[in-house]
Length: 223
Image (tube, rainbow, N blue to C red; front, side, top):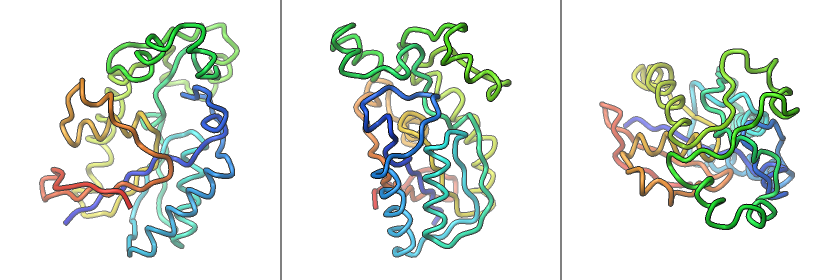
């Protein structure tokens, strides 16, 4: 049986401060570091091991993966790609979620956060938040994204890159973000556009996917 492990990064500083994060590169909170250590310990205790790992280019995901691998005493290849980045929250990035609800209304913010194909307001090219990312993202830098947009970069990367390792029998762990993992799970489990809005992924909790020889999910569970 083929197993694929997915982990949403541990709590970030902006998760703690209740801010929209997106592509802004904030690090783990102390709780987030603890969550990553616990994830690594659980995986090791249950006998998991990995041959290769994938993560985004954002430090909260990279550092979560580093901690997990250290806890498991693993020295394996780590591949980083913006394809696995969190959804880009546009002009909402860095804003407090409660304050944003007061300004735009609970319903509008819920639509921006949870809908499948509605994008938040764009982040202007002249905004310092956008300018700060120009050097890092020379290939692709969106102004905003909905979940559908995120899926359109995550799934091809999975199909064209990660899937090859699974087909070769390698044990794979992916540490990414709430929305990039929601997109991958939607694809793996064939979840409808309307149902995916209800999926919540907790921070720092490994999800194990058991796959058949055709890499189709048999079942999945949290550990």
